[in-house]
Length: 77
Image (cartoon, rainbow, N blue to C red; front, side, top):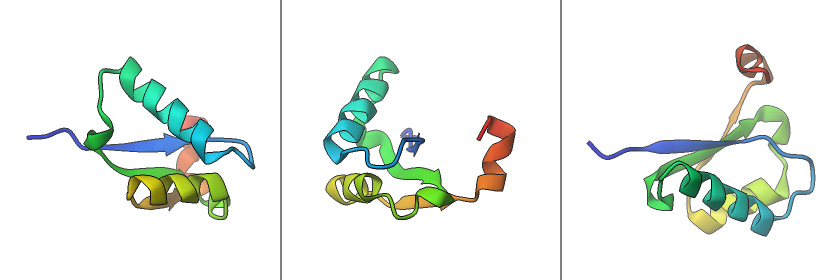
């Protein structure tokens, strides 16, 4: 069964799409993973209007899901 990953993002407002993509690629490489293993991106609901995240999802042709902040609390969110 192929590995399917969702990359979760926490970032400051205004992060440029190129920086987000470079960080994503670095993280995947550090864990021996490939971009084609991604099936989606995710971030907290209060990042819903973040242009860099939206642009990255569009560039990679991946869905961008927004998780309720309350659901992230157990993970330090």
